Length: 117
Image (cartoon, rainbow, N blue to C red):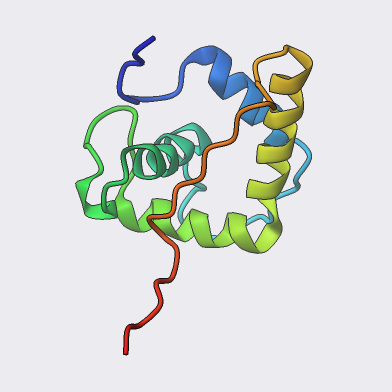
């Protein structure tokens, strides 16, 4: 079964992620209003799924700037948001029998390679 390339989060996908985000109380910030979290996640997932660079993010109603998206990646990493969202979605997928635990694929493209010589 072929999948369409990622364009942006569907309503159902966003509801699952947004539910996970409710577990966090993000600090209130002064000045510029906080970014739209759905657009932040659209940008992060676009880069992760497509494997593109931040500067290749599309422009339009579903997107935010690359610098804003990257800033939120740093914050999410520090606060443990990615771990919480990933584990919650993994549990949901497991409960719905969407994961075949008998099959495992490993991508070695980011593995360190030994130097020769």
